[in-house]
Amino acid sequence: MAQGAIEGYPKGWFVVAFSGEIERGSARPLRYFGRDFVAYRGDDAVVRVLDAHCPHLGAHLGYGGKVEGGCVRCPFHAWRFDEDGRCDEIPYAKKIPPGAKIKAWPVVERNGLVLLYFDPAGEAPDFEIPVIEEYGSEAWLPWVTAIYHVKTHPREIVDNLADKAHFAYVHGTAIDDFSFEVEGRRAVQRAKGRAFLPGGGVDHFSSTTTYHGPAYLLMRMDGALQNYMLVAHTPVDETHLDLRLGVALKIVGNKAKTEGFIKAYMDNLKHGFEDDLKIWEAKVYRDTPVLCDGDGPIGRLRRWYRQFYPGGAPSVQSVQSTLSEESR
Ligand code: FES
Ligand SMILES: [Fe+2]
Figure: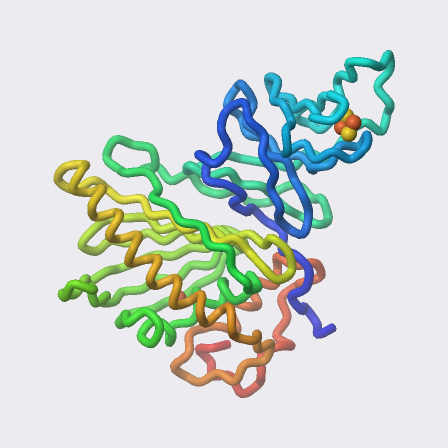
């Protein structure tokens, strides 16, 4: 294995649902990281995520599990589990066996999203997803959303942040100013450019796009409209991931008019993403790409990203010595 190679699943916060996907008092299955989970929203409105399969005879708690307060009851023989995954009641037994527990995962609900902290080594979270101050306020519309199930590896999605050259050719966007920096668990791209609108006209925009950890990307864009764009990807298994898109917009003029804007904006964004998707689903990953001086800082981004993988200390091994300064 190459030093610092990207294998297995990264650790960090991952969006596993938009808030609206998990209703109060109901449980549902999730499948991510090659494993099964049950997510449920208690009667107190708090979302919990546990491993899916009951330690008794293995039923999946996400298919027919009943929510009671902050607990979930197995659909097979009615053992009940609390939010820490401990069995606290077996209706037909006098004693609860010591092994009657399942793993509970760290979860937060923030910015209209349910996020799970995944770490294959089981360590506690070591960074936070920032609160979007405007989100949920009167002046902003909440996320308009889309979900894609994509056959690709997370590293392809992440490469995009530093891939300055693809904007013109895939998205028809001119980038006039571009910078990139990394700091701890964050990677930040700042761009100024021109987007050519489908109906004609040019939108001069400036954007700040930040990865908070390996999989949660938030872009703040100021142009004709002020908005946030969310791109959150979560590995389903080694070959597929779920990609969640969201657009939140500041209300301009009246609300109904802004709702029209946001729909058009999302349609436009989806077209842009579908152009990326076609490339991602058919491409191969180049561990040692041949880069040129007009490429963005792909090597730097990859070294930053490797920190989220087991044994993935920063390394320069996989970046060819022929890279330009910028691409390093
Ligand atoms: S399998 Fe869950 S209670 Fe029996
Ligand atoms: Fe792209």
